[in-house]
Image 1 (cartoon, rainbow, N blue to C red):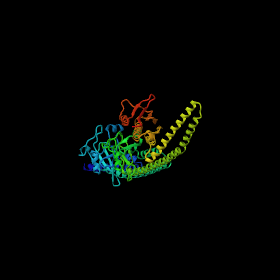
Image 2: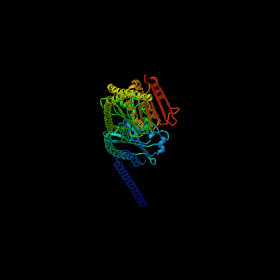
Image 3: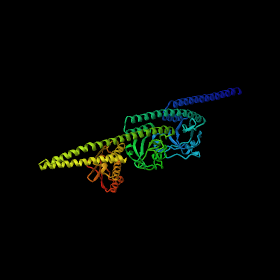
Image 4: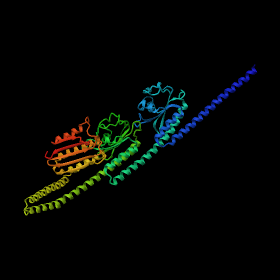
Length: 569
């Protein structure tokens, strides 16, 4: 009996040994396969140079390596206390939409931000930092979190939940993800260096383009448009606005806009208080926000930034003098916040843009001086040549009239002499106006009207047609001329912001004892229930100088605005 039992015992022991050996072989094979998958993941992540693709590869590889149902990578924002970007695996677009906005770093996600160390949990809800999940969020139980470091900086965190099969994450899973996090840090650093080099090259090319545009004699409006467009493209922004000091210096005005709804922002006022551009202008340094639409500190002004997230406002120029302009850039919600790595080259480009605008302004000043010199020459020629010849012609005709026997013919000659006298008076008034304005060091109403029309061109997107008649520089009193220019600027701004017009005609006439300004456009007209505050301002300006104001919708469509004032007020 004993002899029969012994072989059975030996067989059992052999079976146990074989089973243990098979288990070890399977474990070794599993470890080998996991190491192979880890190496493949590291190579896959390191192959990419585009940062967005790198981040996506990292979170996808993490989910595969530990067989997790859900995985996410949270990028820590510039403030160091919240998440500025959140990439997920395991959730469909429909589920993401139902859940709502991405997390910002509260609860258990914030625990890794505050304490950047690996965190392994068997029950997510049992942790003191857990605040639960929002509505429509899938229930998650097991959790593994590992920080991702780039050099000595914590770039973000990997979050993994619910291992397939219902098992919990173990130390081996933690070790694998920690190893992936190290490789991810290197890949992110390489991608950022490559991205910075590419961006720097694009900034240099943009600066060179702006310089060439200036040297080739391009108008200011085209240069400003190129600055906004290049900044929009290089930073991957949704909008780009360039705001400059408004007349009077009590705020800013959007001179050029690019990107989403650009036409609605051109020409819009930007207060110095309660706006991102205003804060950059007053502080003289870049200002950033993680949520342009929802930041309660930035609710002033008529502009709405719904649907926009991270934003930066950079002053144009950092000289000792006042800041004359601001470049505003904003991205969509969920996209990366603007970091110091981006703002440095952006500020350099803004300085270059400010220099370009200053050169354009100086060139414009030189052209103005040349125009004034040309006016002086014209005035001399009119006085010394044209007036003398007209006077001599008039005297000749007056003498000849005595020799004409036909009464009707003599009267016609005398009327012609009277017309010549009136012409001489007009020319003398024009000469006086040209020279008087130059001596006083301020432009006349004609040149101010031309400047107002030119300033409105970027906001309109086309050049308005301008026609002027009469002795605008001599007969129109200074305080009335100031009102005319203000009304013209406000009228063109209203057209740019509300009319959607493709053509604007401006007529400025000084005739008899009145000056009249007419602005016609072919836009949508004035809606019956639309805001009337702008029109009230124009009417009040007319009343302040004893004038009249009327606005109508012509039968052919659009709007016709007529503002007039007496010259003797």
